[in-house]
Image 1 (cartoon, rainbow over the protein chains, first blue to last red):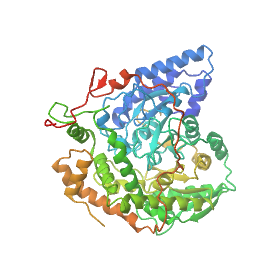
Image 2 (spheres, rainbow over the protein chains, first blue to last red; image 1 turned 30 degrees about the vertical axis):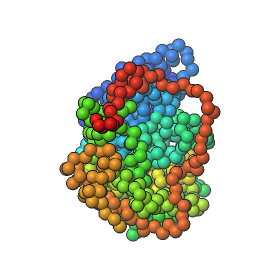
Image 3 (cartoon, each protein chain N blue to C red; image 1 turned 135 degrees about the vertical axis):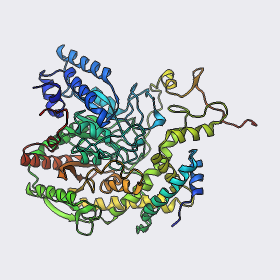
Length: 510
Length: 99
């Protein structure tokens, strides 16, 4: 094999096998990815920071430990990329914002520590919409990230640096975070698997907060099996997160294996009518997306699943409820950026008092979408408007959760497209908040209810990837992995290769 | 449903400690008007006496024993502060000259 180019095209299961068998070294694997980043990332713009020296040093240490006969885990030497919302000790962490430019955190997020403890090698930090507010990564204060399938289109958002890195072969897998769809939607538009875990099942300690009742971190990977493995590494109770659930994870890698075996007899699948699932509910959905979704559901039915239509009328109000709740929580969370304890400080020249320094710092440090959401959230929480906006949105959240509960009394999982369209062209929605928010239409209900949901590739429309979303009850993340793996295995077998193999990268092997 | 004026946006920006420019006020007022119209649709829901939901996980206070646990070294924290002096974070004055 031709070395560097080939190693970046392997999935984590394959890399793990080669590393464990001693057929490649961690340094070779790491260097292959660093070389590919150096060659391709000036075009893709996936990374905000690349940890060249630290990654090679970590890989060298793993190779030494392995040759000394140390017992290493299966992921030792596997590279990983982290969305820049994940706090990492000594490594620049900005959350895509100028207000944190140059900050090197004094501690690490629990998920970063767990990945490091598993022996994975941090390649770098990936670009994102500022404070994870966006659906295209165009709200990053730093750079545009391009979709590896079409460089003139968005990579999704807010975890668009992670999606571009993994689809563009600049990392075998990556961490994303999902508040209203920010793992699932970028995974869908780049041909990846992305899973938002049950709220509370992955620690939020060290994730830079956007909307605390919604934020969750999760895996973005090339295969369902890899996503399940990463989820098992990062998940589980953490005493440092007071919303962390004290329950074991539900056999996720096992569920992926079971699903790949291709037997879905006895699994009841509900197609959500309000999410493009029936005539009269398809406005804004592209025909190609609806077609791939129908075909994917037919595949699942062909594997033995029972498919029924399910109606959840309140899902139509998920988007307005979300765009009140998330900005409200953000307006409170982002109050911590006051120019005093860390990050940017502007106007500290003796002529301005603290209040003025705060206002100047926040004005210069935040971008337009962040300012819009802080202002909207402040409005929704203000006296006289609270009940009509924030209070009402919270009641809608209860209705949505209740409809999920009723639906899951009848079916095991619910399915929909992950996004109503394929990746849209860069620049087409960035000045139109309402159009941008519409990208989250299908992912918001599960976010508001705190439920697990996965996006798995369902095919191409006009040459661009489409994702199927599979939602499950709280703590039944295993169902997402099982059904997703069944679809993936059946479609890979039918087409003879993975969807991602249809993406030919300019620098890739022939 | 209420709308949001340019003056409202200026007031909210001041409450939020954002020294927004005149151009931003013009831009945000129009955009927030549109967003507000869209999100006001939550009012269509027949919520009756439905309880508000703050969180997906049933939350109770999570307490730990009142014991000293390791914390970050002072130098590590001050290294991230925009200005430090004498082992402390230096802050701009908090009161006007006349105080």
